[in-house]
Amino acid sequence: MGLSRDDVLDEFRQAEALLEGHFVLTSGLHSNAYLQCARVLMDPARAARLCSELADRVRHAFGSQIELVVSPAMGGVVVGYEMGRQLGVPAMFFERVDGQMELRRGFAIPKGAKCLMVEDIVTTGLSSRECIAAIAREGGDTVAATCLIDRSNGTADIGVPLIALAELEIPTYQPDDLPESLAHVPAVKPGSRTL
Image (cartoon, rainbow, N blue to C red; front, top):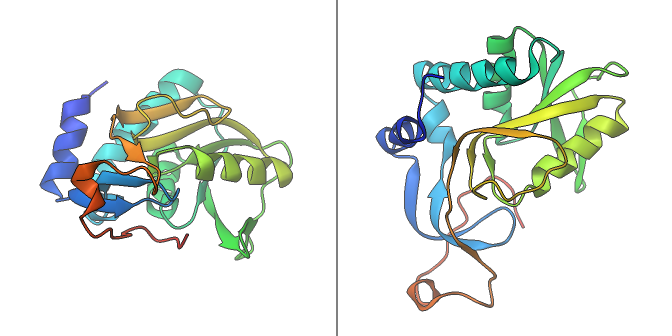
């Protein structure tokens, strides 16, 4: 495999996508660091480089059995498209409608399709599990999942094998149990989904 964990993190640093401060994550947890994948993926060459490595890891683990890439919007759309391109299979995404993941825009998952669920970042695995459940509800079979960064450092259980370019351990905190270093710093919510 070509890119090491340090190589991947260097890509994030070069893209100014590894932010420090006080952040409210999509999960509602608080953190002193945030990974802004949109900054990494805005450069097509960087996106292709990272997703090429991820696609190689998927091929190594699962051969050519992947028939479809499925992502949750918003964070998974660009990385999902690029993974579909790299693997030579169609890519589609679920959108959140009234709190539920739904296929729109004429997307449909063929019954029994072998799916790869693709995210940008996994923190708790909640969005991943929701997307995998939606894939099953639509008749697909999620073989595995991928992400650029696994913030859980390998502890998130999403129900299928998870392949990440890099694992990180970035502590997260409940809103009522913040460390002193964050307690007096205003929190920002840089993600795309409201709580």
